[in-house]
Length: 160
Image (cartoon, helix red, strand yellow):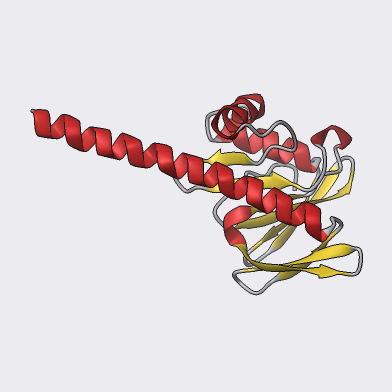
């Protein structure tokens, strides 16, 4: 497969090499002839933003300064986080809202998704937990902003 856009069924994007990735979905897996970072960047554009814009948004909302969790699609709250610096082009990307639980497995981590599919990810438990916390902070800030906008629209409607 040459093209792939992240969707609500996407669980993780794991690099096979610098130009190929394995995409895990709830029901199927795909080999995509693009780097994991390219899939992330293309998906941001598919949903109407740039990767750079999403990074700036994350930094502005949360104060996070690196390894940014990214909101891919806001209305469905599709948030992915990297397992390593994206400069290496070998980062795996995990869907925050699909994780059921995670645990330490030797020097790596085991992630179990809500559909009971599990993946061993080459990331320490501490780093995985930190990235999940950062992605949850982004999710909370977006939810907070949506709630403020909703409350403001109620106030505006009541003034009419």
